[in-house]
Length: 335
Image (tube, rainbow, N blue to C red; front, side, top):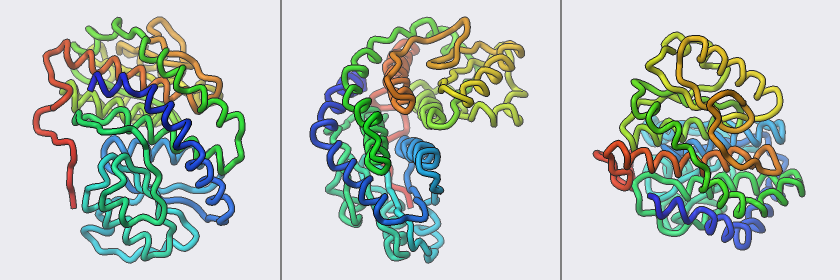
């Protein structure tokens, strides 16, 4: 896992050279198709990438993006009606039967199917109208890292093409160098509080909610620490009730109005005694460093990279094996 995290800047460089033109052109074609919206299909870490796609496309285009559970097709054999929609499947391996089944149902329902995959020679890749390779290279650790970052880059590139957004495209070209800086971020001050906590909140808003979801998943699968992902707004609608001195929280900040709501959540959690650490735009006494990109949509990617370095080290320090967590396999085939 550590070696694959260290490869992230090189993966991003490869994507800038080989992937960006293809992703961008896909976005342009989608804009010209006059779509009514998008649907997504994914599991695990890839589902967090789909959440990222949802927020950047809904806020960036005004079109709806809905997640469809794979069991709608694989278990319930539902006929989908998706005329005017594009259906995107996110997967590292492309090997799970339920993902392939939903993609096939979407295609039969007249959606244009797009597979964003690290392993393109796979059932999902073979059944898609358009295949976009993540270009992360072989990923052997059970916990996906570099392929997730590659999916975020691909999603941002598609959006840049859809909107003809030169500012975003320029930021993506700068991302490999910023990723190197993110890998040097020192989050060691959070090691002991997180290791000792009885539970963890991982909190984000908008695009950073996907990073919070991925962080919660990684705490569970690599460190065997219970973690829950919430939006900065949703946590105040119930989950905040369990916040106390035994709970630690990791807040992934974003700018603008969402940043203001995140700050209110930080203050509420701290007021109830929780140990709160913030990353990015939300400031306070326990700030974990991360480089700031030249575009707001790039910042969550850098936060994820810095987090990966931290969580792998945390797992080692508390005696876990992040490369092969107990009870998990690299390719999970569900129906």
